[in-house]
Image (tube, rainbow, N blue to C red; front, side, top):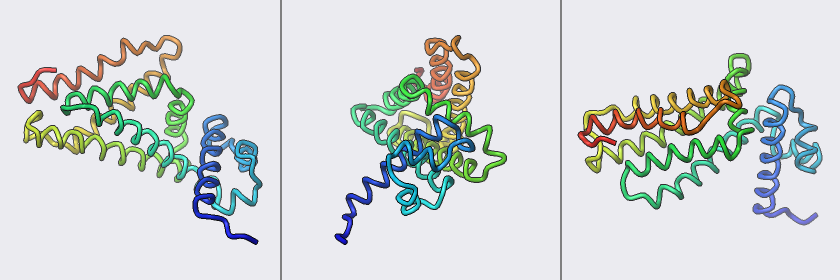
Length: 205
C-alpha cells in the first residue's frame, strides 16, 4: 500500500476538524456525535479515530482552528496599521465583525460557557481561548507602552484580561438582546474603555 503523504494527512485532519466544528456549532457539544462528524466530513468512523481519540480531542482541535484562523486574519489587518491606537481600533471592529460574520460560532462560545462547569474539556477549551486572546491583547498594549503611546505604569496583563472580559460581556449582551441587538449601540461601550486608557496617557481617544 502506498504511503500517505504528510500533506494529505494534514488535509484530512483539517477536513475532520472543520467538520467537527460544524457539528458542535450545529448541535452543541453534548448533542453532537461522531456520526455527525462522519456525515459532515464524508469520511468513515475509522478515519476519524485514526486522527482523534474522541469528541474531547476534536473539541480542542476545533478551538485551536477557530483561534488560529481568527488571529491570523486579525494579524493581517493589523499589519496595515501604523500606531497601536489604530491596531486597537481594528481589533475592536474585527470582534464585532466576527459576531456579524459568523453568529453561529459566536453563539457556540456562549453555549460553551454554560456547559463548562460540568465538562472539563469545554472548560479547558475556554481557558485556552482566554489565555491566547489575553496574550495577544497584552502584546498590543506592551507595544503601546514601548512606543510611548501608553504610560509605562499600566499593568498590561491586567488590562488585557479586563479588555477580554469586556468583549466577552458584550458577547453575552448580544445573546440577551437577540433581535434588539444593535452594533451601533454596543461598539461605543468598548471605545469608552479605550478613551479612559488613552486619557491616562494624555492622548484622549
